[in-house]
Image (cartoon, rainbow, N blue to C red; front, side, top):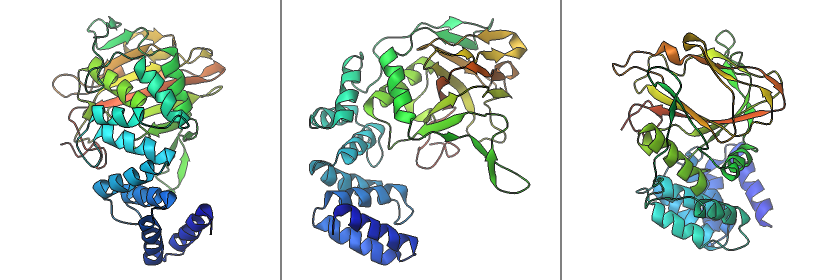
Length: 328
C-alpha cells in the first residue's frame, strides 16, 4: 500500500467514526518511521480533533518526520519552534533548523533569503525603529512608509493564496454561514502552523511598531478585495471583550488597483494605499473607552485587486492556542 493510499484509508476510518482503529494504524506506521504517518500524527496532535491536543508530542513527531525529509514537517517544526508552541519561543533554534533544510525545500530557501535581507536581533525583532507620520491631530492614526519591502509583500500574498475564502458571518436567524454584508473580501488567517520565519519577523516588526508584545497580536490576516468589494464603515473594537483590541496595523501589499482608499470619516482622513506602507490606529483610549475616531472603511475597489495584511493587537498577551479572550 502506498503512503497516500494508506493515509486515505486512515481518513476513511476517521470519517466513519472508527477513531481507535485509525489512531492505532497511524501510530503503528509512525513507529515504523513512515514520514507521512509521523507528519499526520503530529498534525492530529496539534489540531486536537481526532486525538487530544499535545503540542509537545506533536513537536516530537514533526521532528522525526522532518529528519526523514518531509518538507512540510520541516516548515511546521520551524514555525512552532519560533512561536513557542509546545516549548519556549526560540528564534535562534528556529533559524538553525531553517538553515539546515535541504536545497530541494524551495519554500525554506525562499524564506531564508527573505530573512537574510532583514536586519534582525536575537529574537527576530528589528534592530531599528520605524518612523511614523501622524495623520490625526492626536497621533492616534499614523502612517509608516516602506514598512515592508516588495519581496515581503509578495511573500505574504503568495502565503495566503491557498487559504483565501469568502468572508462569512453567522446569520442570527438561520444559524447558517452567509456572506459578510459588511466585509465583502476574501480572507485568510496565517496561524501558528503557517507562520514561517519571514512572517514571524514581520509580526515582530509590527509588535515593535505598536510597542506591544509579539504574543498580544492576533494571527496575521490577509484580505483580498476584488472589483466592487469593500469593507463598510466599522470599528475594530469588540463588544464585551475581556481582552480588547487596542491597536490595528494595516499593511498595503500592492497598489496596482484603483479605488480602495481607507477612510476615517469621523476625522476626515482618506488614505490612498501605497504598496509596502503601513497605517496604525488606536481602537481605544487610554482609559479603555472605545475611540470612535478610529471608525473606518475600505472603499470599493474600482479596478484590479487590492491586497492588505491586518494584525489586531490586544491589550494583553494571550496563548494563541486558547484564543485572545483568555489573556495570560
